[in-house]
Image (tube, rainbow, N blue to C red; front, side):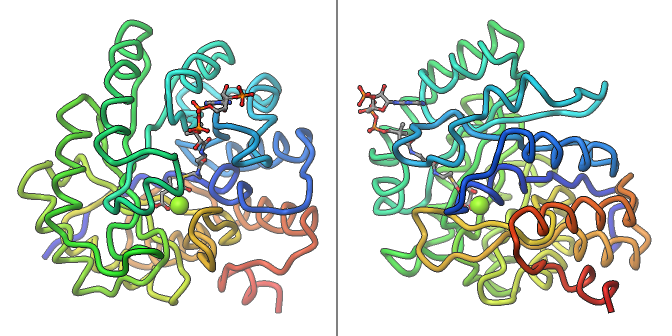
Length: 298
Ligand code: HMG
Ligand code: MG
């Protein structure tokens, strides 16, 4: 097995990382975080969500954040859009790339976006159409690919079926989310094998939450499966409001450390990334979730 020479890191800290925070975070602090991540060399930063503020209050200021961040040419600043209303708000805020999000489990779909899996996929069709007209690229997410907080086991075939639909409707990449972090390396490989039968592997990404401490090894297993795009969150911030107990995404610093060790290029500067993580942790008054950041502070 040969490793890829380059991995694309999708920084989801400002969105997945902050969406679950109970304390208010100012627009200025969010802008500072996005700018610091840009400065660290991340090529894709998920800045926020255009979702109902009643459902996810922390993402309410996303339009203001988009208006105030420094847009570095070549960097993609993305946002989640669950429905047409969210998509239109994102377009009005000048967003150039969005993500739609479905689930591989019916119960999670209901809790997260208040509709069934098939209803969610139907909702995405007009978004895809409008995105094409506006020249906006759409990324797709599938949640609960290695387990569901409500249904337990999720079959790899079910994951494959949803991923296939998202790809067929025009998502240029489908990110497969271990929302509750229960996956292990062999399950990860089996899941990518099943999905890879329908969606080319270079159109798939891994999105691992680290709840059970498996995220790093699952990323390694994914690399062995030919996956070379990973979502991660600076300082390991995050969790999903509709997956109780879900801890943060794998820390970007830790993924970067491993990729640097293997000799895989990312374009991300470790020192600047550590500074971005340190700053947001001091804003939030919390200890970093990154092992590398902890080690470097010693
Ligand atoms: P709903 O209540 O079914 O929507 O919510 P509705 O169409 O019946 O509308 C109800 C109210 O919400 C109305 O307002 C709408 O205008 C408003 P009212 O008349 O009551 O004042 N509304 C909106 N407001 C702002 N933005 C919108 C919007 N749409 C309707 N886009 C909805 C459906 C999808 C909106 C809701 O369920 C929602 O916002 N859910 C939030 C889901 C979410 O953000 N989850 C976390 C992100 S997903 C995740 O973390 C997983 C991921 O990381 C991958 C992984 O880890 O697995 C991606
Ligand atoms: Mg997530």
